[in-house]
Length: 239
Image 1 (spheres, rainbow, N blue to C red):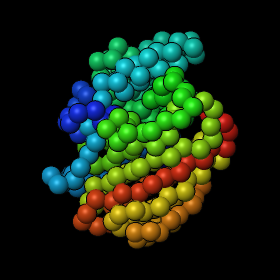
Image 2: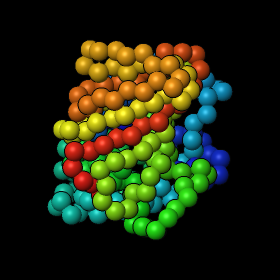
Image 3: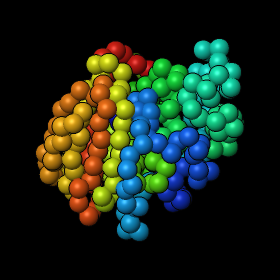
C-alpha cells in the first residue's frame, strides 16, 4: 500500500507527464510493487483522481532533500531504485509527478515510508482535508489510486488511505518493512486480498487485518469500482 497527486481542478487522471519510468512497468512495493498479469483497463465510467501542481513541487523538494542528505548522486539513486536518472531529475525539478509505482521504488531505495516523499512541512493544530486538495497518486494505467487521509507533518506510526481499484483490476505489492500491519475495510464493491498464497474474499463492510511485510495484492473481483479504506501501522515511528 501498500503496500499512489492532488486534486485541484479537473485534470487528466494520471500523474503529470503521463508516463513513468520504463522500469516502472511493474508495481512497487513498500518498497515497490511487483508486476502482475494483464488486468482490465479503467472503464470510462471509473473515476480517477487528477494531479495537482502542488504535489509535483512537494515531491521534487522532498526527493532532492532526502537524496542529498544520504549523499546519493542521481546516478546512484537510479541504480538503487530502478528509476532512470532522467526521470529522477525531472521529478526533482518539478517537471513531472511520479506515479505510485515510481514513488514506491524511490522510497524503497531511500529507506523511507511511502508518505515521506509527498509530505509537506506544515503542521497545523487542526486541519480539514478538503477533497479537492487531496493528495492522490495513481498507478501507471490509472487502475489504482490512493488518497492520503492524514497529515504528513510530525512523527507517526499510523497512516490512513482511501484506495480505489478499477473493475477486474489487480494491484500487487511486495513486502513492506518488517512489522508493518494493514487494516482494510471495503466500502464499495467486491474485493479479494491475496497474502502469500492465501486469498480472502471481501464484500462491502468486510474488513481484514494482516501483516503487510510479505507480498500481497488487492484484487477487484467485480465489474464495478472498489473503494476501500486502509489503516497502515508501522513497527517504528516515521516522519
